[in-house]
Image (tube, rainbow, N blue to C red; front, side, top):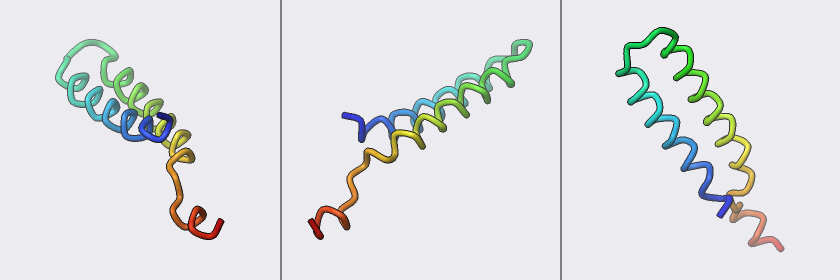
Length: 59
């Protein structure tokens, strides 16, 4: 399940950017980009759970 979180957080950041930048509220841009960066950092964190085929063939 953790291997799919990378794609989930990348998709979530895209959705946040698409929806959030359409809203014209005070400080919405900073909030949207902050949430997108947090989602991308979480995606990078969970990328270590993606299986590496090179290591599994040698084992």
